Length: 90
Image 1 (cartoon, rainbow, N blue to C red):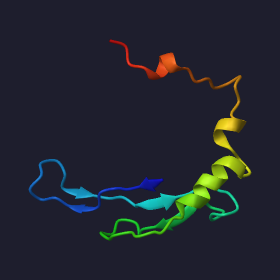
Image 2 (image 1 turned 180 degrees about the vertical axis):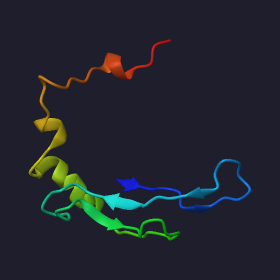
Image 3 (image 1 turned 90 degrees about the vertical axis):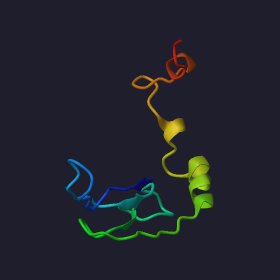
Image 4 (image 1 turned 135 degrees about the vertical axis):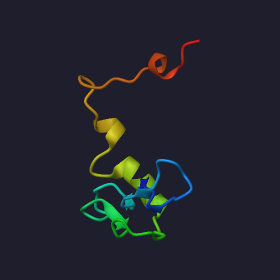
């Protein structure tokens, strides 16, 4: 997941004077990725570009054979998913 925030000064935009944030690229906490789940992170409150390489084929393999498989290991007694909940009502 890429988590981004706006940092810096927008002097010509009303009510958007100075913004503070820290951007990061987060991964699953599984064997093929960092233990912390943080692939990379920007320096807090600094205007910069964050470039990160993530191998999406590893993510696809983890969905089928990782130590935690979110859809397969979810608790059906706590969470449910139905098509009626996903479809907008007209």
